[in-house]
Length: 277
Length: 219
Image 1 (tube, rainbow over the protein chains, first blue to last red):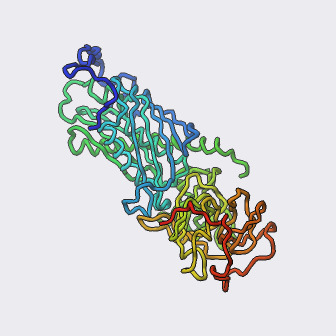
Image 2: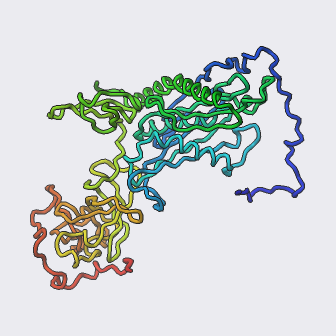
């Protein structure tokens, strides 16, 4: 586990003051079960509206920014570059390298600059979700780097990272079979919450009587090819619930698709206004 | 205008160009850009998707590339590939020109320090993408390939006088290079024999001390 050796920690018996803070009492929603804190409905495919923009970082080959509720992510793509390490057989096709980081100010408690193990996990999941979408055999002996930075974590980070990364790849002109969109869902008992916020993901507003079927699911989906490229599940769910949730996530991705396409068209038009037909 | 994975048309209507891929008999776009339909004169028009920013070309087998020599040793010369055709690359790719690929004739009598020097700009052709351990393999074994720009020891840009020599305009010293036969008017018309018999290195007379560079890394 890499540790931060440059900061002074204090004596070994010291503990972080945040342990002693009393957590702010979260208002339990005793109101009707259908309303969520931000006004969306349970049990319906009600994804947060997104703001997406491509091409904001001039130094990178391609970049994208996504904002869904309070979750904010930014992604840069570099490449195709020459591969530095030649230890794998990557002569016929290129390599995709993903890196996902949380900014220290992104979560409620300050994180560290050193990549933790969950960031490494998320990077690997991002890689698995993106790889089927990119035409890597058109880039032999090259590597494409995708760097995602989470500026504010308000839930469904992996799903939005997948969407943001595929938009940045499209903005960079990397050939892809299809855009990869991500959608996240949280199952609580009989109802589900699509595109959960951070509080909903960590079960702060548990509706009563939801002891079984408690879990969350993230799906990465290629809409036009109708293929799932990534699936990440947490918690305990019954088989029917799980398959139902996968279908719901696919519906959520379809709702997101026209927005992403429109943002890409705008970005292409901005970069090169159509001179002739 | 098309974004990723728009179904453009079926393969009966058009031929696929760049930026598209085929699937189940239909042509889909793989880039976000503008759709171009060109009539090439064959039966079917060619459809391709282009972005206005320079298409990221990778050096492909058979492509003519412009590269800069970074280091030489008696067996090969290492280069940085700068341009593929006429499009500049954003990132440098590394390449190798082996001793036996410098010239088409008398491959075993080639001396790399008489063909290239570090800093020269060379036109070469890609012969192979290389295997796991090596870089792109390039060759200059054609008349039109070889050194196009070189600087002499004195620092001036040299003028080619034959296929194997260049002369510095300031000091008039001649240096050995494997010169490319570029079809432009700035070259002087007296090009020596390109291929075939050439004076053997032993008969060329004493090399001027300026062209003997003792700082070259030798194995």
